[in-house]
Length: 322
Ligand code: DGY
Image (cartoon, rainbow, N blue to C red; front, side, top):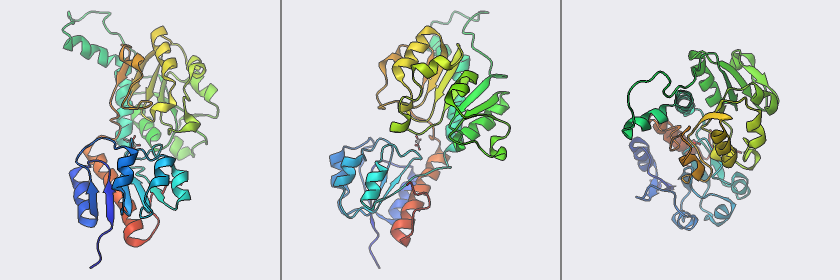
């Protein structure tokens, strides 16, 4: 019987995923559950045929250049690949694969949750209670805004954006979107398409951001674009933190141009732009988008499907990133 390939697993994974990995591979895994350093990653990868990695792992061009020649595939436990220098991996003949589709509903749920929390000032209300400051019901207390009839602007109408549109229709919201390309009518489902960011932002009362990270989208939402949103707009980001200019958003939260924001992702996370911590009208979640038992199992199994294709069958991974 041939020895199973060695697989470096950089993080702790759901039990069912770890069990399947251990059944099929010689797994090398750390006990610690936080991102490892580039040096540790390179050392642990010695002799590994595959790496099951995750957001936060340092897989930039410099690390990839130092990976041992044994590594044939990087399977990330995520749909986002901004932590991996994909071109550098390809140049070394290392395949890269991700886990799209299975996290769309869970991530759209968190976007919807943040939209509701921002519109209805849920974090402020909870803090009032926890800090013992609530003096009872009052006619003008913590008035938010109703979502029904509001224009939801979805930036990036991929699978997650379309799931969010489906949910938001249930709240009576009017769906608008900006994308590189217009969707076919069955996927658009009546949503209004804007080919330019300017027209899109002017029409948007609640902005939900679903664009990938990386240099091309860095600080996409800057001061000029924020100024195009109508006064009192809401901003929610469940995509990647680097797509927002934090200083500009905090300034707009303080001036009231932006009524409220809801964030699940941060530039340079786990560190937060300090201005968010003192802004009462921002709801902050710790990157929970895909954090359901069902979704995290499905992501792990998809990552293993990618590894199996390459390492067991010599085939391309079903969800290859190019
Ligand atoms: C992803 O998959 O890229 C998410 O951000 C992790 O939930």
